Image 1 (cartoon, helix red, strand yellow):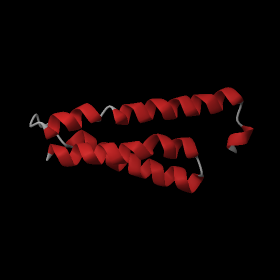
Image 2 (cartoon, one colour):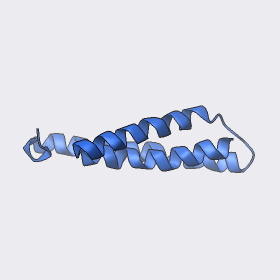
Image 3 (tube, rainbow, N blue to C red):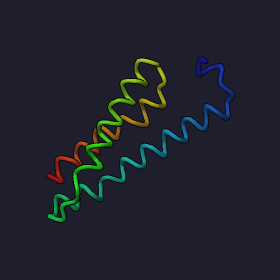
Length: 87
């Protein structure tokens, strides 16, 4: 089913989900700051998030499902930064 064939409320749910997913990954910033200030956290959750988000971005790109791409792309960036700073 093409995105344009979906009911308008379903399209809105997709974009609201995109926004909340982006918020989830932006909230890595306090963890990154703690890591940089010597309060190092475990790196495994951000590493798993990077792998998960990368797979979803690839899938969303191939399937041309842009809310999936947009909601997972920040997870690659912020998850990777959180992982690296936790090492």
